[in-house]
Length: 97
Image (tube, rainbow, N blue to C red):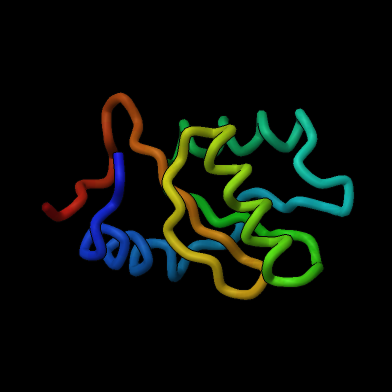
């Protein structure tokens, strides 16, 4: 599933007031962090993830890895905070068409 611009914009608005659910430390994308991301996406569908420091390219690559591993869709990356979305079997969030 690929998000359209309108859907991505809608998800950005929903994520604006949320706090990061998962915080990734200097150890990076460990198995425990992958499990937490999967659990958070299953529960909430839309989550914020706090990324470790580093340059922008490193953070973008890390977000791509997260999306691939968790089968999630990238929504946005601002500074060290990423927003990702994965629809649940019974979706809680209704996306615009």
